[in-house]
Length: 171
Image 1 (cartoon, helix red, strand yellow):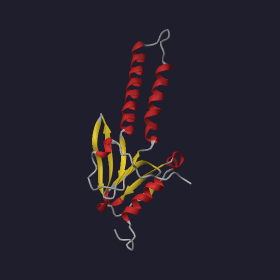
Image 2: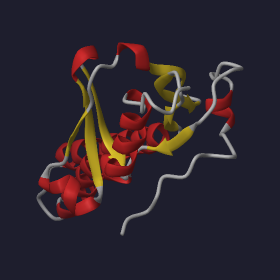
Image 3: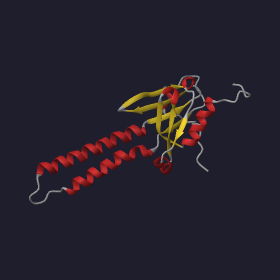
Image 4: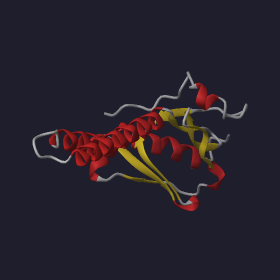
């Protein structure tokens, strides 16, 4: 039994300012933390490389400086990726699907996909996604792929429920 995606009652300010007054039925999620793994791996590898070429007798100081600078660049890049991840939200309303950035490195609506343009949605889960608990949603009609979606089955069911309403229930 998985975790149910709960409709948000407290909407982050970064998201709230981009919602239309009549939009309701909101699901707000941060993208999965596995998005940080490639940058984290590179930063740790850069630190290992920098500590491996510590000053010793007969070593080139320029090489040591270059490796430490590379490690610093990789750590800075990790910081940017973490800030981007922390302030990026997947927002699902009754009218559209959005990816909203709210950080100081860039804020705004990164993606706004009206549900009227979506004809079908597919859930794709590769082995890494199954292991860590994320998936990708593919919207074929709009040529959009949302990667690193947490709780992918529940999010897929929420979107499919908005797209394919029961005609007997009405609005």
